[in-house]
Length: 115
Image (cartoon, rainbow, N blue to C red; front, side, top):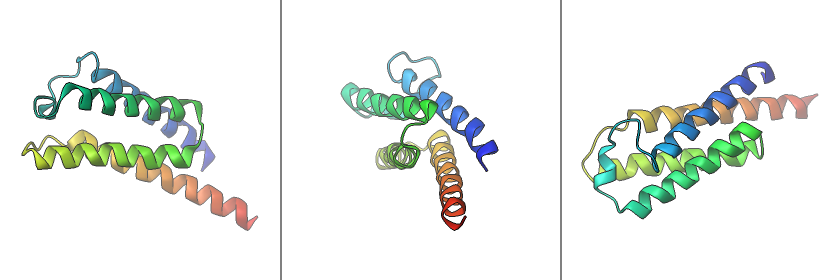
């Protein structure tokens, strides 16, 4: 599973990096939630997304990184739904991506423990 984990981890990190930078320099198109929350809220989410990106790309604390990513993107989904905006596809994709990475980490840990 290590063979598939590394490229997925790097792709995940790059996606988080792009999404995080977009909170400071909008280039992906308008996110409807940005008009509903204060700018500091968007910046805080961006900082967390950049933190997830860096730790994912470097490979530091992969379990914690996936849990933080699931939390950040889940909060994004929740904020969208609370404010009546429904463009949540990207956040749902990232939560599922983080769950897949977490599963791969779990499988590798169990395989090492059994060996």
